[in-house]
Length: 214
Length: 214
Figure 1 (cartoon, each protein chain N blue to C red):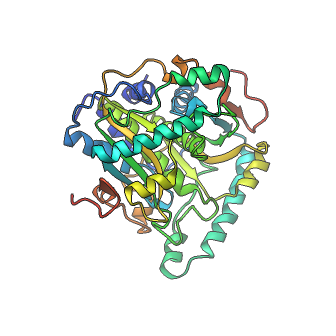
Figure 2 (cartoon, chains in turn brown, cyan):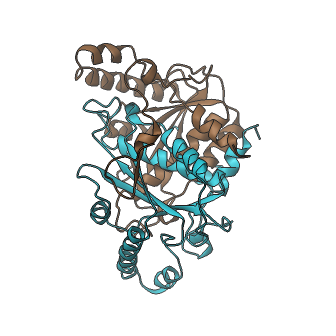
């Protein structure tokens, strides 16, 4: 391994946290480093189309949690048999237990009208926002914090809750805060929902065709 | 700073490389670490919907380069005056000079039909693919390699070139390889195309409203 193995350590330790949040405070300088790391992500045409809405108010988090609970029920209703039983055991959010939440948004008008590199691929700006989210996630992991991306919500609900203007798209609701520990296995693997596949199976050479033998 | 400052160093050194590729070989174990890091990204419902097509053949890269050149001309034709002059000086790809390319794709059917966490947000799987791309980018940076994301292309062209099946979406063409150095400033900032904004301007509190005073 190289002198930079810490990066790999962080990448492989990182987990999507639901149940391990302690609610303890996040020191201001720690949060600043995490947000600056997110903002250092690459973006198409240097458009930096992301914003971060920090949410600590219990009222806002309780309202979001109630919405998530309803969406969870809607998803559960699409499942039957073993899937339904497995899903019933899975905790899908730590909205109320985590220290704070961060909503990440995408502004397609920033840097416009001619965003260099976006004329052919309309979603390229949205991709940039996701790169910033991964920086945030890794930085939080390096700071011994947990992050949980909650995706059981409807965008119009979130837009109304936070007064997000028309034209700005909410991309993620992230729970953030100190944790008791990061799990060794992803929750969904531990609950038998789905397994990780070996990375070699995702590799193709010189075209789609069949995956290369590993 | 914490014991994990290398992660921050990597995040802030990372650049979107166009002109600094040397074409030198990438050791196999290095490439393996980078691909395994990409594959360790979080994904909605643990769907791991990404694939990586490694491209070394000059013929494929030349064909893609010719297409990028045409798309560059199409974008240039939308610019006038100072923007047009600035853009003329900007190198937009290192497809031929870099050691290899990696095309990253998204398979919306993987893990289906009920992908946990994707029922309400159709794009959540696409977001996962971008998180893997940022892991790849940071791992390459830690290995002293450069990455350049080329977005001057049309998806149907790339699909045809690499035999990517209908239903699988190409998300990124990444150039990868050793570099002479990573630039201190992003190319687009150095060329006066656009400036980085202070991260504090991207922060809002408890709702969209106005950004918080820093």
